[in-house]
Amino acid sequence: MPVIIDTEKCGKIQNCPGEGLCIKICEQNAIEERDGDVFLIPEKCDDCDLCIQSCPNKAISKDG
Image (cartoon, rainbow, N blue to C red; front, side):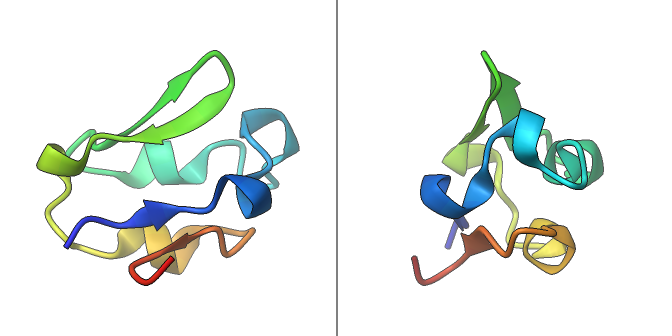
């Protein structure tokens, strides 16, 4: 099951204490930045959960 990014909690790249850490650590390139927003490419997500564990804003989950 691909992860879900809560856009309310995320704060986009400019308000992320990790400066887009989820994008940097995703080995499958399933998370990318588009115009400052963070987007998930579900078909690339391999359920490794690194982004969930690393998100400083707790904006990524599997249950929304």
